[in-house]
Length: 142
Image 1 (spheres, helix red, strand yellow):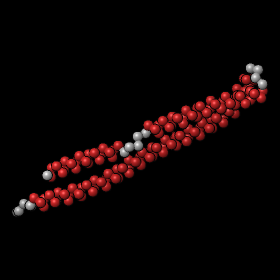
Image 2 (cartoon, rainbow, N blue to C red):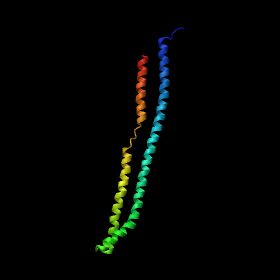
Image 3 (tube, rainbow, N blue to C red):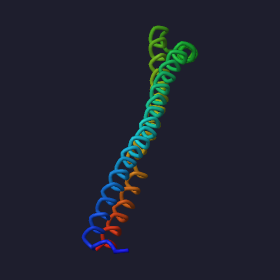
């Protein structure tokens, strides 16, 4: 049997490298899609938590204003504050407290969203490994 001439083995290696590179790139694209879908799903979950926190803060403000404001108003009236002033002042005090609680819930959820890393880390690592592999393949064929 005749061994292949050197130029034909290089051509064969280059064809194989082209084919493997094409397959590798397709796999990388799929990995990016999968990883970004996971990241977006997590981001959406945190965004829903922000919405839920805001809704709970709003509902809590209504309940607290109706319930606790009357109690605070009664305490103010017994302390000698005028009835009309005690009514609006008690509601303002309770409203501020509820707003602070709601703000804390929203800030907590925003902090969780800001801390989330959106970079496709698995894909970046895989691309680096593929780059190293391709460089090694090219060096071994020369």
